[in-house]
Image (spheres, rainbow, N blue to C red):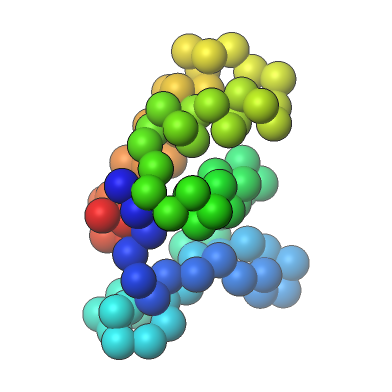
Amino acid sequence: MKIKNGFVLRDVCGEQVIMGEGIGALDFGRMLCLNETAAFLWKQAEALGEWTVDSLTEALLNEYEVSPEQAKADVATIVGEWQKVNVVE
């Protein structure tokens, strides 16, 4: 998977939000607020370019003290939300 062109993470008034910029995000018309963990995962996804739930799970395990099962479930939930709003492909 990868982040669709035109979507970026920005700090807006102390909140981490995904915003659409440019033609690639023309129909988006919203901002998505991310918690600390989701923002971390977005940054990892940006850095990796192409990624999987497993690669983001590994990054989460390296950063936070969480069980592998819980990490994978959390990553899958977050990625599922990103898919619902069409910011990843």
